[in-house]
Image (cartoon, rainbow, N blue to C red; front, side):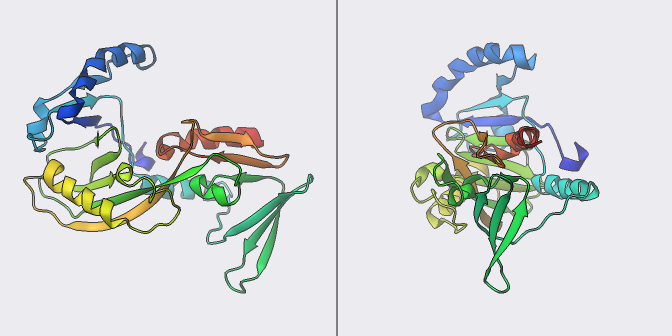
Length: 277
């Protein structure tokens, strides 16, 4: 837990006027999940709207999820790299894979040589493709659609009144407190077609929308500055399930995390490793 910066501050769903009928489903969901969770997950916590200093003219209800936690994903990756390095794993980056071929005895992997710009050939006993949305270039026949996510983070805000994970608009927007800053992302649903891409460019329309919602809904009483803006690429398909399968005799696939890679990626990786071995 320490190596991932794990904290359990719960999460909250912000509801607007046209979404209040969702509250009627809380008892159903709590009863449905109780057998697995052994606790009541969801509670209405409207008194925290003012406590968190959200815009009470827009946020009409707040649903708390006591079972959700959060991690520091950068710290998680740093710790993972340190761990596997100690175990003897070598990590090579910056090598673009152009194609692969399962010969029946081994796998030939063709990569671009960034120095000579000529192709370079690797041989492997097995190949696992885990590049999520970017797998489309190597696996054109699979149901994988890229989904770009726009993100920004503020500079530190003194006396920020909330911690935990927050969502609104059916989960299309997500924000959290991180070391006194507000990390905020989403808005893909306002420009779906443009965001079906593996390009890391900023979508100014969505970034402006994030900034507007940050001012009007999340931080209406605070002065703040934006520190960084960036994008991340997710992978979606007709099914919510990830693609976890043996592609050919020596090639395996673990992709299409559906925007839930932080939550389910380690389990997918574990099952993929079992499949390979």
